[in-house]
Image 1 (cartoon, rainbow, N blue to C red):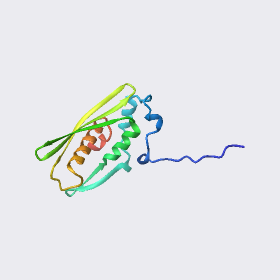
Image 2 (cartoon, rainbow, N blue to C red; image 1 turned 60 degrees about the vertical axis):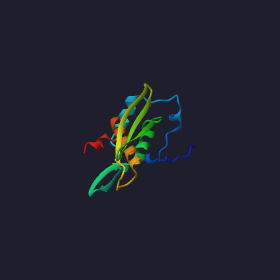
Image 3 (cartoon, one colour; image 1 turned 180 degrees about the horizontal axis):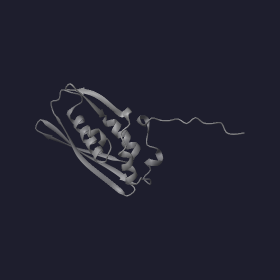
Length: 147
């Protein structure tokens, strides 16, 4: 008598959690594998649209970038430093990936007017911009910048 068939549950990446085995300090993926995954186009389900100043723009939310990093580059770290420059908030962001060969870091800035009349607040918007730019430097979401 054969064992009953088990139904395989497919979890959308938006609900995916980093598997415990990947969280352990002993396991790191090779950087070339991580970069190959990050350079894949972001699935369309993560791409949203909004209208800003009468123009429709496509974007990926900061938390979707975090989910994708958790999935493809478990153990990454994100650091920010905030600066105020007159009427602008400037965020310096540093994204570090941990791979089998060591750590790899990219840095970028994000800025926002302190008096904004759109979504979010200056520091959150500037941090999201810095995160997107750091991710693009690793290849994640780079295809969205080429439009």
